[in-house]
Length: 487
Ligand SMILES: Cc1cc2nc3c(=O)[nH]c(=O)nc-3n(C[C@H](O)[C@H](O)[C@H](O)COP(=O)(O)OP(=O)(O)OC[C@H]3O[C@@H](n4cnc5c(N)ncnc54)[C@H](O)[C@@H]3O)c2cc1C
Image 1 (cartoon, helix red, strand yellow):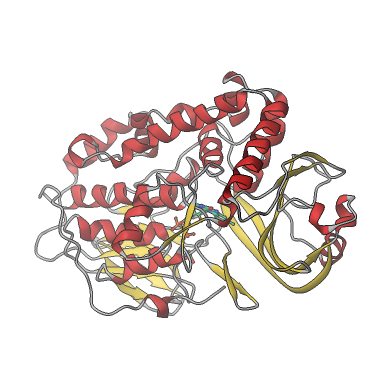
Image 2 (cartoon, rainbow, N blue to C red; image 1 turned 120 degrees about the vertical axis):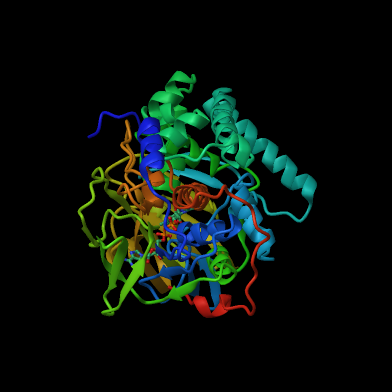
């Protein structure tokens, strides 16, 4: 490890790095067509980058962890599903691409139950009514129930989230007042978020005055739903996770993947689908990218926009990044009906629509939610678990199963504290890593925020011209629908 402070090392690199020679516009190659890769392309164009841009995607669909599944004709989010109302890049993409935002189904008052493997330790009530006054009364009763169990510390939890969200909003400040960051640490320190990555969520919430009951139940349920992990995740990942349980959550109608597809579509990009990059070598002033298809590409700038942790890309010269484990989340989609006896009930209607769980090694799943009620005896469910759900287990939880779809996601980093961050710049030349930021938090928006910084970093380090903002270059014709089919 170098002893040079990050800010100074960036300054040194900026001073010694000669701009990419202006005899040709630099070719940028981006590995990954998720929201991170698509956002790099978008912001490069937005900040007037004129050279060719290639995006490589190993799958035959774009969007990465933004993906959908279709069960009996209905399409549901299989990966990243909810956006926060203050996810301003996503808000802007949705407007720019003329996509439609819909409020997340789980934002409607669904009943919540906290299951400990034997009983529901907490349950909200649910009464479906078309009268808003009745819905308001139910909402009020549920708030009172929450207050009775968890006390006024609920407001402190809210405040912890709000303060963190407010700090994050600094990343949307105007360019003049927002530096270009050479490292993740620098970026987090500037917004006042770094310290949250050095302590666990449990420590942060305890210091904020929350009771053990509130931390071990409600906060744990939320971190298990959003990151499949306990409250030992870092305070920052924890705050982001808690923010994802608030009000005003939304999603893109038809699938969040359309943000990536739309940005790629309008960024004048050569998109190489079903083409996996297996090696990146720096030779004779350019990167040579080799793909599993036997193709070779010369790139002046290379951006890795995917987590490197479970990939087998060979780098020459070799790169060094801290070890990071991905948390695997098994998403299981079931069309059928759950078995009330599993939860100790006689009637299906007694089971809350969202079953969250506390931390216990006996529990085979982290959460189950109803995605759609087709009829009283026919529903679509989404279930998350740390291990795959076997048929034997599913047959205990469900009395009927007409369709089952399983997806094993290398979902997000396994968070801990203090976090160690990979560099944004994987070498001293032009090899960049968007997903270094994922140790802070993994969301669609954080990928977009990291990508915007990488785009600025690329431009500032490869040209002597200051950044200028272009009007967005629209390309003709829509290829969005061609870019995606279900998992
Ligand atoms: C189950 C689940 C639920 C989630 N819920 C939410 C949520 O509700 N809200 C939220 O904001 N976030 C959520 N997230 C997190 C969110 O999905 C990610 O943080 C975000 O989508 C990451 O985007 P990305 O572009 O950085 O990476 P990815 O989406 O992973 O994109 C990387 C792309 O690179 C491609 N690739 C990898 N290697 C190569 C190679 N060698 N050559 C070519 N292509 C390659 C991959 O196929 C992939 O398409 C969730 C994630 C999961 C898994």
